[in-house]
Length: 263
Image 1 (cartoon, one colour):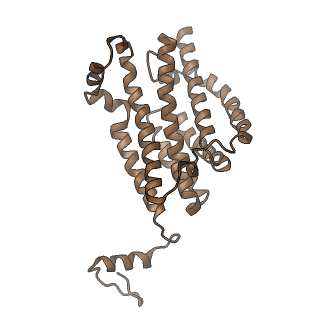
Image 2: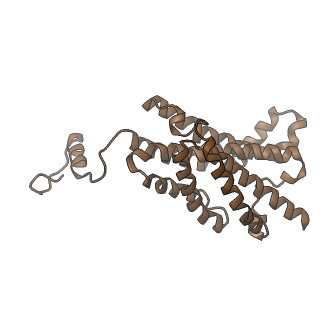
Image 3: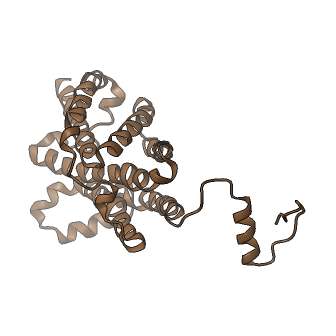
């Protein structure tokens, strides 16, 4: 460790390490909440990537086990199970666990992190305007082969209203998890420490979860995530962002299905 006169001495104990760490710290004053939030976020992102997505469900052997407990009449929806797993785990890992930890460790209720309707009404025209702004771009994108080959994720969504709605419900749970985790859990928890920089901190992993999507959408996630973060901070809620994100996704799926049927 570095002493007051600038010479180096060996770290022989936890106290030595702590003293060295505090002396060399160049950022804002250390607190308990910020490193906890960042560490928990890294762990949950990892767990969701390996165990929360539909691919894990398909390769884990869970699907035949779940089907064995389902009525035979429901087996027609067997291909929906991976997406139900995806939606459930997004809700559980990205909303339930963070909310439980925030309450247990810091006694912070979920509405402090954006799970609230109060005060959102004046901001709804902005979200509606954003949807209308995006609509022409979605129509244009729907003509691209990469778009048509990607959406909907559920190949049988066009086979009936029941298939479409059940898939979109799972999709909606996924968006609730995404918006709360990246715009609520990360931004609201980090904003008082990093201010507007927290939007860019949360945008980095948000862009990375789009790496398996078309490059235009992946690059657009940086702008979209930052904009949704600004709106979430202003409205003190992530719920309008959930509605916007979900509405755009449903529109994308409908456009892709219509293009596929037209062909």
